[in-house]
Length: 25
Image (cartoon, rainbow, N blue to C red; front, side):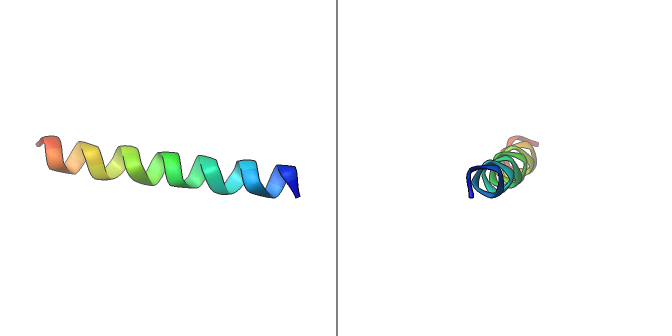
């Protein structure tokens, strides 16, 4: 469970960073 949750959190972090990157430009 913990590994799955960490994987999901990492995916959201990458997605959030990608979104911020597009808004910044």
